[in-house]
Amino acid sequence: GSPQLYIVEGDLELTIDYIRTLEVDDERIVQLNFKADKEGEHTLAANLDSLAYTKVTLEDLKTGTMHEFNAGDNYTFSASTEDAPDRFLLHFVYSLTGIEDPSDVETHAYNIYSSKDAVYISSTDNNISQSQITMYDLVGRQVYSNQLELGSLTRIPVNVDNTYLIVKVVSGNEVVTKKVFVQ
Image (cartoon, rainbow, N blue to C red; front, side):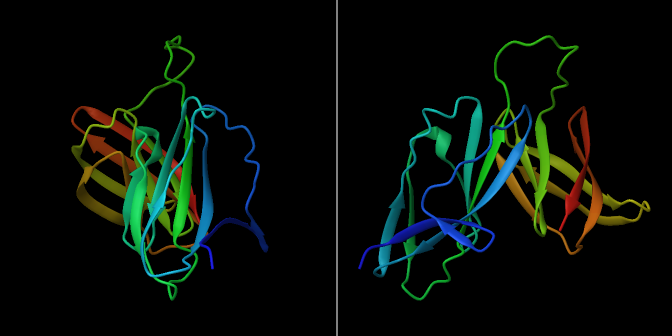
């Protein structure tokens, strides 16, 4: 008779999990399952004091909502006892915010990464901007192109599997290109 929140690692369902230390510009996505004990509103809260320099975003797969926990506010959502438990993804992105030697670290306005059947583009400056997104396979064929308003985290589903894509983001005077593997 109580709600259940747990992480899925392979065949294991864990209420406590250890995530390896992330390196600069490293990303990790964790499946977070939720089983409601009753119909109605539920609230998730996170204390992220120990995750300095780590941006944590909750992706609600049911509603398509991206919620940043670093802002300090909670995430409230409606759930039913009949809902599938694999509702959420937690995105962890580590990036230094201190002053660094520009020759040591190349900085861009966007982090680009993938998980399962989607490419994610997160803004490092949290500004919403109109951007041209183009994706190519390794043969050079264009598999996606669209003009989008990119916010703090944008999810783009792609219809490819087990391949690398070259993702190009053009926003204003900046062009960011990254190779990602889509499962």
